[in-house]
Image (cartoon, rainbow, N blue to C red; front, side, top):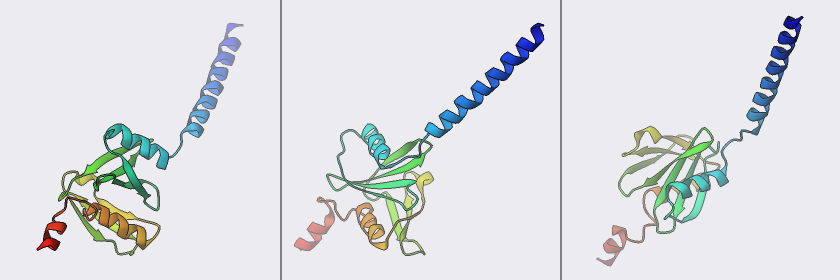
Length: 146
């Protein structure tokens, strides 16, 4: 008489486990711009984001910061790997598609890759951020003064 009760309890526990697992999977969301901003703020609380652009697949985000610096975030599960790009530590070239960038981070090579954007204009703007064209302390001003 005890075996039917044990089997019934095991079946109910299995059904309960499957429902909870299904609910947890449905609650798990893909990373988005809001969570990218929050993760970057946690990683670099002293940096203020001025503008942000996502890649076409929204797996990576490039940010322009208040003082002309740039940042990068790559989706890693439900969170982001955040990186503050330092001057002279990144190489950028255009991707064959025309709307993307091939980026090489000298200090974080595992973030290297080809990042596609929704338009060539966005890719061009991000490349300017990465190359430091918006840095108010760049050598370009000193070159113009001569």
